[in-house]
Length: 310
Image (cartoon, rainbow, N blue to C red):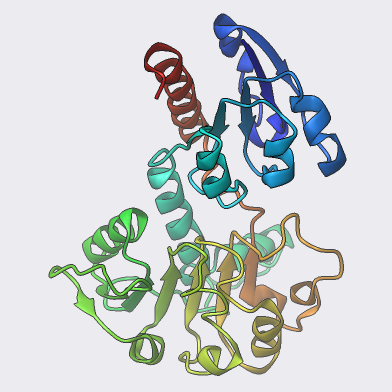
């Protein structure tokens, strides 16, 4: 049996040699589109993260199993794979704690003015201060704030639980319309935008969430509101967001963008109030612990398929 990993770079420094126990294993850091079929031509199993596995690839290879090293499988033509009796196995639940932690890291960076005061101190301004502290920027507690959560799935519920423990008043908007939780107040979307001091996005990208936040919706946010997106890029229209950041005093933390890697000369790089924006490169999921949990799931998915054919 031959197993081919097409984008090992997405898995950091994880030691993939463990997969050699199942047969011949070949790994590529990245794979351009025009090399996918060639590299999979003799493979029984494809291991992919963001590589597109479409009808053309499936028709020109002899794959039996596709191991998705992520939760989302929008890069794979699932219906066509099923029609060809090719099994697709993904991984879920491995990054909940990591994304949860990153959500609050972004949130508290704004509430506690971490970025500003780190730079302020290193520039020697604390040394010049006449008292022991400084009030140039005002800190805020999460306690007493209204926290609106967009997408009350597994991660959204964990964020809601922790935020409530900090003393926040938590409400949510269900993007699917199917999630209900009596522990938290359910609002329609406009209500949530108007009422919340903090909004965090924990939703998938689909027909319900694409461009959910455009200029119109962003204008509804309170002055000085904090908006966090650790869900998916494309939920917020980024050109509209750049425009709003130039016009309104809101603070935004993004871990995801519509196109990744970030495009050069992105409009968000040219906003006037740069202190009101923090961008991290889709790393919320990528703690060492999450990566270990992810690859254990992938390993067990392959093992189960070999042993049971499912």
